[in-house]
Length: 111
Image (cartoon, rainbow, N blue to C red; front, side):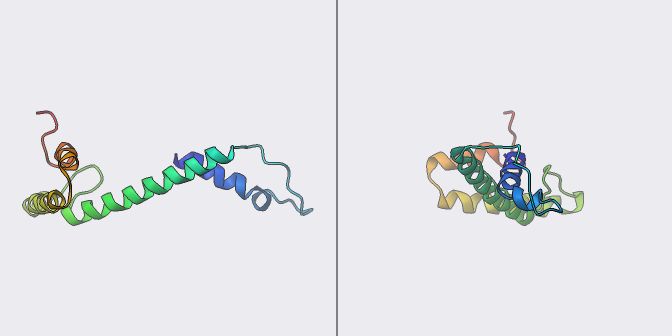
């Protein structure tokens, strides 16, 4: 959705972006319906919120986006992962707990 959201913002700001020396802007070649715009921007906002939350969790646990952690911090990272998981379990319902179990870093996803 990110590229589409950027196109929507460009279309909304087209007169400013395309203003010529004569203070005239040609018509914008991109068009989206109001529903498309609202839906895309709403989805982008939710995704941005989720991305920020995931970054906070990764930073607290001590991993980078691909799940890697330096060998010298691996033990601490595993402990932090366990603490974060337990905190999440305490706050969530059974369905969410199951989802957490299925999607946590360091867990065996193949078994």
